Amino acid sequence: GASEAVDGGDFTGAIEILDDVLTRISKVSQKEFYGKAMGSRGDCYSQLAAKENDDEDFNRAEAAYRLAIRAFGQTDMASGQASVQSSLGNLYLESARRKDPAKNLELAIESFDEALKFFTAENQPEKHARIQVSLGRARSELAGIQDRRENLIHSMKAYGEALKVYRSDKNPMQHALI
Image (cartoon, rainbow, N blue to C red; front, side):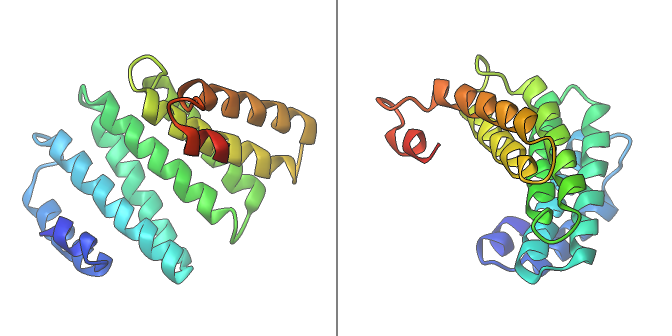
């Protein structure tokens, strides 16, 4: 299936499988499954966008993530919605290297902030810390473009939150990288 194609690096093949699945399920009665499949489709397009440096694949990834977020928003799957928000943030973070850096970094920050509304240090410490690192990176990169002081302060706060989870005695590698 799609997972095997992804594991083999065949993102185009995985998209074809996911597209077939998506034509067979209902957006209305199977929202959770639809959201998961659409999020996976976004992940595949995101990988292609990064690999090929292709704006069309970026746009397809963004659209798939937005459809997944909408589907999850109509269910009690807040964790699914937050996971896709994080993936969308990473897509924007990667895209900022290619074009419209300020706009894409601001969109990344918005997406990470949305994901952090669900993934707290209390309920999902690892995911919370990982998103905080990404948020810190986005803020740090944005500081090189605009509002240097403000973005650096926010970047340091995000890294500080991540360090609460990635302590030197429990996660020495992640602690050192921050």
